[in-house]
Length: 87
Image 1 (cartoon, helix red, strand yellow):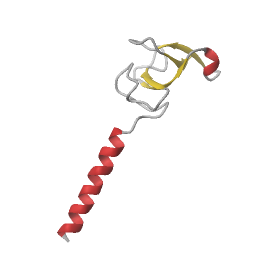
Image 2 (tube, one colour):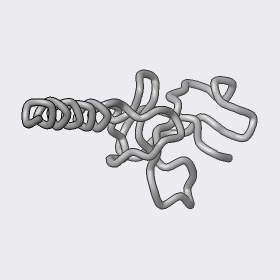
Image 3 (tube, one colour):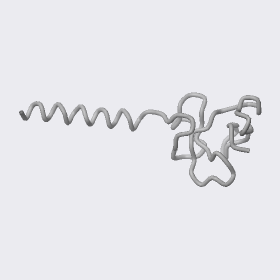
Image 4 (spheres, helix red, strand yellow):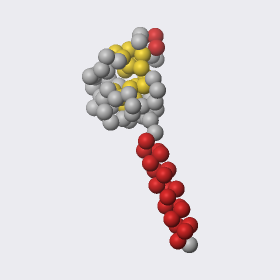
């Protein structure tokens, strides 16, 4: 019984660590504006608009045509990277 409990605890801990270390998808919340390592490849942590208070993972872009019609390709604070942000 104790052995099964320890195995279950170890698996639960491993799953928690694995989920906590995975990169956030575009549109999901992130912590540090300008951090690319918090998000999936080709995304960066930034505020989705000038009025937003919380950062989220944004799609990296080079021009407006890389973004949805409701977005434009603008700079992310503290970086030289551009991302798709709401117009």
